[in-house]
Image 1 (tube, rainbow, N blue to C red):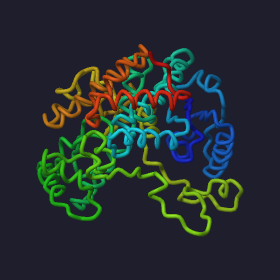
Image 2 (tube, rainbow, N blue to C red):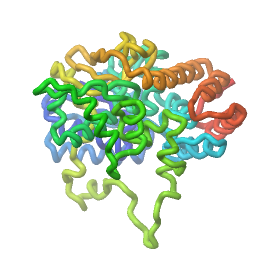
Image 3 (cartoon, helix red, strand yellow):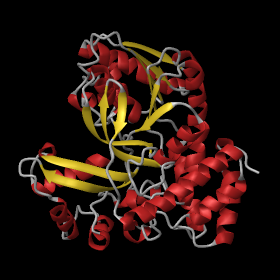
Image 4 (cartoon, rainbow, N blue to C red):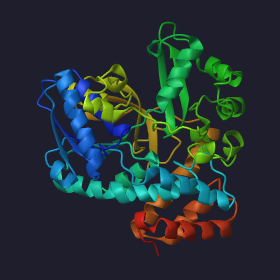
Length: 431
């Protein structure tokens, strides 16, 4: 088996995937090749060296190689895992601040809202060439994508390429962990199903496996009356107004509403104005990877802990024909896995994974009030894909003015012009 990890130089995503593969008992002894790919030579060298050190520590026989050019890595690949970005934090800050200067109030400006339009286009400029290479060099490979905005990126991949792709995200585990905490029981004691779109889902089923009792009304009631400091206020409002138990993260669900910033504020969470500086210099956040590599710090559980992402478990599900249930995959709604959403949209639903691949489960309908919001964003996604395909600036503008956060057409037109110029080195040209 050959797994190609594109974006391997990332200190968060790349490291997590490398650790997951090298500590996996299922992958050991199966002639697995892990190919690390990143265009950042320095980051790739660091992560490759660290991967070899982890390999020696775990004793796995997974073979490791690395490439700056993905076309050298992809031939013969069974799986490609992608999480790619360029100048992520700096451009993300522009996605937030430039729309705000025109009066468009984001929560974080990552996956929905006017700023996310440009995040999408930048991501497509990276992901679509990868998909073309997969089509040419390993057409039978499965692409597992983490690149955000997940629903928008995957929509273009599914509609504009022939790549067999699914999107993964750990967001569902926030809801599952909260349910477990509310009932003070392990989550595997419940039969749970959620559905929606990436970062904007709701729990549709919550049943006690022992008694068969429907616990969803009780969970919604708990969310509605949770006044603890850790309970996100918009999440609680969703329970109060719509009667739904959704992603307990106001930053994420707030992206899909015009009033999200009412709950999150309009300071970008990652901006320097939110950071308290000390007189003395401090070490940058994150694990001290150079110390692990030099031997100054021993490889410990903090480094070697599982990432919690689903890509490696899903690969093992397919390899071992485990028929395992996975709580959330992003796929096209082609068989109406969610009945009251369009078949062309990208949805997030549970799936069974076996030797034949990923099989999304049908979950019925979303609550209509929730589905109405989702449909708007699926329509925006359709427009963005078509705008990218045709290089139509007019379609980009249509996608902008349909967005719930946009309340001024002339401001949207000016913002579009400014952002296309400001980020021109990272975007396609539009006419």
